[in-house]
Image 1 (spheres, rainbow, N blue to C red):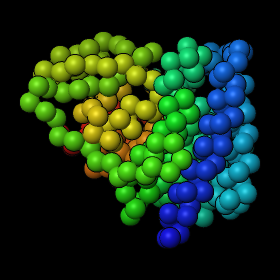
Image 2 (cartoon, rainbow, N blue to C red; image 1 turned 180 degrees about the vertical axis):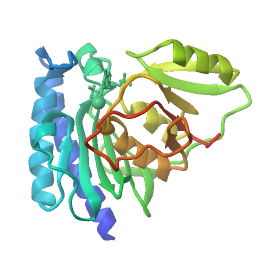
Image 3 (cartoon, rainbow, N blue to C red; image 1 turned 135 degrees about the vertical axis):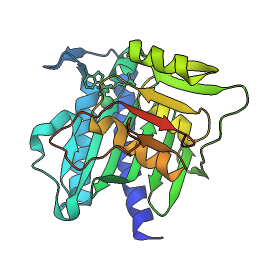
Image 4 (cartoon, rainbow, N blue to C red; image 1 turned 90 degrees about the horizontal axis):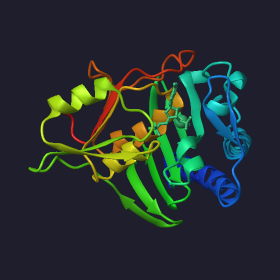
Length: 256
Ligand SMILES: Nc1ncnc2c1ncn2[C@@H]1O[C@H](COP(=O)(O)O)[C@@H](OP(=O)(O)O)[C@H]1O
Ligand SMILES: [Mg+2]
């Protein structure tokens, strides 16, 4: 087993542990509070955050952690510009609506790029894992690892994935220019993971997102042969984590 694989499996175990904690709360009544930016947060976001941060600190004490639910603890990247980037519960609105489209996300950033990514969908019992040099994998349950690859669009047009909660005129204009397509709404980083496994072709995102929403899924989609790029065609960068907002971006299974 390589060091990268050992680390990938260790980070996956941490994400799965958080996923189990999330599911115990998902089955009961969900209490929702609003954060300062008016976005919803639940006990599940906070519980998952505590478990992930404590476990990553045990696993890798020298590497700083930037998490959506504890941004104030982050004092900047560590040696070699490395840090963990965590969204303990992406798709909180989907969690509250109970449509199963929410994920736990952990990425390892090195020199501004996501070099390892773990995305777990707790309610679906599916995981997407990737590390540079190892490839990208989907795991159903605990042990069924399968390598994944992106696909080329079929002759019937593009299968597009889009946010359930954010749709605006820029997206409508972009879709008009795309040509023949169909759109499936979906929550969370699951959209990019579905493209990584060749189940869809493109995910355009014009609404606001933050670094922790994209990093883990970007590692997966890149290792599977796709890309997550800004309007200039550059891969999303994590080199300046003081600025947590992403630009608009596009996830393509095959680069256009
Ligand atoms: N105004 C805003 N600013 C920053 N990020 C936003 C935002 N509105 C939505 N998002 C991001 O979009 C994510 C949901 O994406 P989607 O609509 O594709 O499911 C949210 O993840 P969280 O659920 O982790 O907060 C949140 O991070
Ligand atoms: Mg999120």
